[in-house]
Each structure stands twice: as structure tokens, then as C-alpha cells.
Amino acid sequence: MPRVIPKTEDQKSRISARLSVSFIFGQLEDKDKRVVIDAMETVRYRPGEFVIRQGEDGDLLYVVESGKLECTKLVAGTETFLKYYEQGGVFGELALLYNAPRAATIKAVSDAELYALDRGTFNNIVKESAMQRRIRFENLLVRVNLLSSMDNYEKLQIADALTLAQYSAGEYIIREGEWGDLFYMIEEGTAVATKTIRPGMPPEKIMDYNVGDYFGELALLKGEPRAANIVATSDLKCVTLDRHAFKRLLGPLEEILRRNIEIYESILSQNKLH
Ligand code: CMP
Ligand code: CMP
Image (tube, rainbow, N blue to C red):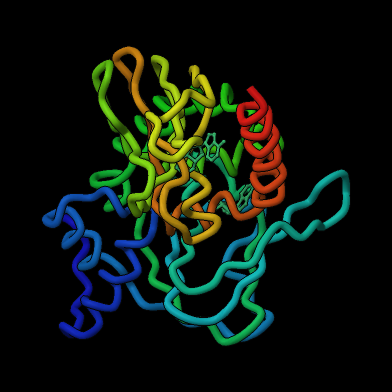
């Protein structure tokens, strides 16, 4: 029987709000989500207290309701800062996914309220699909040049957040001038970008896309309408991140993404000369 810890409706809806923005739980069906919510236990930590210690065994995964926690890891004998967790953050999944000792240390830096999920419920509801997604997308993510500066852990977090989208040759994925919320990476197939360069004339081709390439970042970075059309030139499989996941997971790459915008500008200025 799954673990059920009694909760008020108000508590349930708060947990539900945290789960829906978390990648590992975001894809769950409603009935599975309810089982996870029932099994969650509220736990509280004081500043300086350890939630997880690297090297120990662990049976719980945590979702942050409030407060701030620090994640560190022993690297070449030195305790090294990795990241902070705040509201909506999820940690402690590795020990459950891979049956491994804790891979890092997590300590509260303020008062923190967390929801803890037990291994049994995690195994029943979340593990299988999370493992499949990670295995399925791992190969793709190593082929995306843009992500080459990210470590394996960060790539697996991206895998948790991806959604598949498929198109046929000739289909528009993005239309210039429309508003959009998705960022795309190509898993299989080819596409082109076209753009209206001379007013009144048909859009002109400005870019070819292949496996491992990405597009759709500009609208998300700049908060502007789509700057070009993207059209499939074969059957096409893409993976997408929504605006929220893009900001959160690719935030560290923003500088690279912005630098690459210069490439667009140089292609456009060449195009205008012809
Ligand atoms: P787990 O190994 O169960 O416990 C420590 C947690 O730290 C781990 O799960 C991850 O949730 C989290 N963590 C964050 N960044 C890293 C990282 N780079 N390597 C390993 N664990 C990390
Ligand atoms: P976005 O504006 O969100 O949607 C259209 C995408 O086309 C854009 O992001 C870029 O990823 C891509 N693109 C390719 N070449 C250009 C270009 N020269 N100017 C603008 N966008 C381009």
C-alpha cells in the first residue's frame, strides 16, 4: 500500500503547485500526482542543519516549499559549492534513481520547509518514467553543441524537462511575428529558418538546421515575437523546453546564447548586400 500522510486540502494544493513546476513530477498524470501528494511528509530544518550528507544512504527525495538550502560536493578533497535550492527545487533524486549513496551534501541556510517523498512511492510512480526519459534523451543531449559546457548532472535535469514534438516536411514550427513560449532542439531531421528581409517580398532562407541544432531562443531571451519562420524540410523530431524550464535550466548559458545572436546579425547583413 502506498504511504498516506493526512493533509488539509490547503496543504495538498500547495504541494500540487510545487510539483507542477518541478521537472521530475511535472509530467505525471493527475492520479499519480495524487498518490505522490498523499505520500509527501512535511519536514522542517533550521539554519545550518544537514538534510543530506554526501556518502550516506538515503531513502527520501525532497521538494522545497520555503527557505534556502545549499548544495556542496567534495571535489578533490575540497567541499565545493554547487548551487542553492529555493521554492520548487527538487533534490535527493539520484540516490533513489540509481540506488547509490548520496552524491552531494545539502544544508539549510535559512529556516526551510520541505516535502519528503519516500523511496517506495517514488519507485512505484516516478522512477520508471524518469529513468526512461533520462536514457532516451541522454544521447541527444550530448550531441547538442550548445550544451557542451554543462556537466552530466545538468544535462539530466534538462532531460527531465523535455517534451517531444513531431512535424512533417513543409510544416511550420515557428511563424515570424507570432508570440511563442517554446525553445527547440532537433533530435531527428532537418529544418530551415526563413525571414522577411525585403518588405513585400517572400521570406528568404537564412539558416539550415540539423540534428543537435537549436532555435526559438530569441523570443524567450528578448520577450519579443518570433524573429523568423522555422519550417521542417524533412520529417522532424524536436524536443522542447517551455519558457520556465528554459530560464531555469539554460540560464547559465545565456551569455553563449546572446553571443550567438551576433551570428544571425552577420548572416542578415551579408544577405542584404546580395
Ligand atoms: P542525491 O545524490 O540523492 O543527494 C544529493 C543531491 O544533490 C543529489 O541527489 C542531487 O539531487 C543534488 N545535486 C545537485 N547537483 C549535483 C551534482 N552536480 N552532482 C550530484 N548531485 C547533485
Ligand atoms: P525566435 O525569434 O524565438 O524564433 C525564430 C528563430 O529563428 C529565432 O528565435 C532564432 O532561433 C532563429 N533564427 C535563425 N536565424 C535568425 C536570424 N537571422 N534572425 C533571427 N532569428 C533567427
